[in-house]
Image (cartoon, rainbow, N blue to C red; front, side):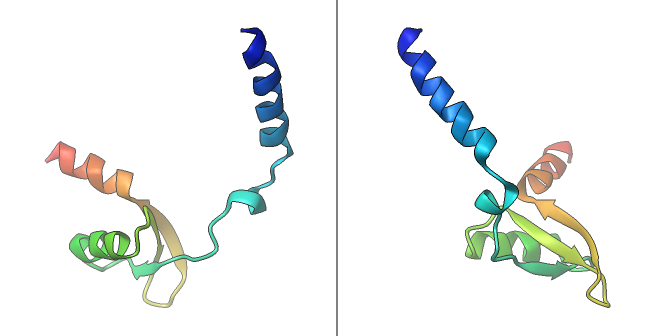
Length: 77
């Protein structure tokens, strides 16, 4: 427990000093909301990513999709 005390405090300090910019992703993949789920899954797999930005036909942001969403949906079928 004592060893964790110093290490845990260092981790907490580092974690609470972070800002979103420190861990955000800057390379995003975008897909249209009417795209097939298989196309979205392929885009994530081919780019080794776990989420996509979803846009409408005008390119306006309408949401995000994560691989977790796909997995949960498939489990309900």
